[in-house]
Image (tube, rainbow, N blue to C red; front, side):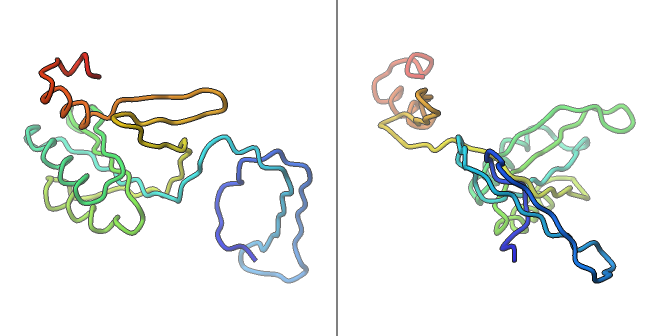
Length: 170
């Protein structure tokens, strides 16, 4: 019956029900129903994939290049976390949030451009606010509150064009 299996949507649950037939299957065959009213505050996006790898033996000057290349090839987000790695070495966890359709292409980039021999893969979901662009700002609304943030690339263009310090434009 289900089109996809995943987390329960954000809602105020009014009724629940569960049942299992009389057949004996290798895995439990349980049917569960939730009836509720949507209390959607956030825009829930499609499932994403989180690719992660620990790197402790690579020249740190390579990371900005890899980050730029991952974004250019469709990464939704890229970040690095400092860690203490095996044998007491400092290391980095390279984390890359990707659309499912791009995961193999981005994994290939990680394998090709880094010293890693393995990548962890986690399906994940996230909540996001609906955003719109207004001049050089990204604006998001939550209830009666607004979040307004200057887009970095747009701010750099304004700073260069007007000769105003970037920190003031931001």
